[in-house]
Length: 157
Picture 1: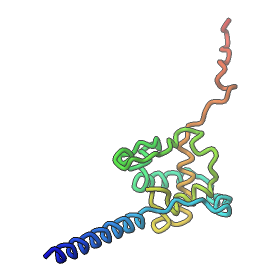
Picture 2: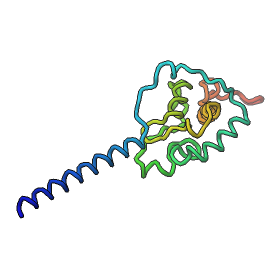
Picture 3: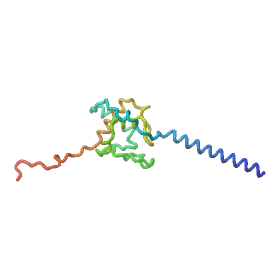
Picture 4: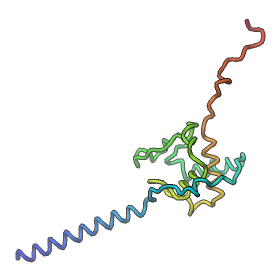
């Protein structure tokens, strides 16, 4: 009887361990892998010029695809940020994307990063380039030091 209990316990342990391992593997396959952006991808230039119509088109798509995490105005405070424990940039800040090239943004949007799924199966390349233009348009332009200086008003002392 003792031998049978030991065998059953061992089998149960191995089955449970196998189940846990398979579950971890399945979860990892759902998440895009963190990877470095290949230099040739980072150097790609955006072939799409920003136009009012392409910005409007991308704003609409952003509302369906990106807003839930990146926020309605790009502030990085979408509905899923807290529950998914995400750290998302505030695209309204002009320095948020200052050091990122369009090729890098294209790669991240297409392939995904961290918990963000890639869009290459749902968006055409031209749509991704337009989205980059839209995201860049969210940044508030900072006033230059010259424009901050008060201009003298006519007839003022």
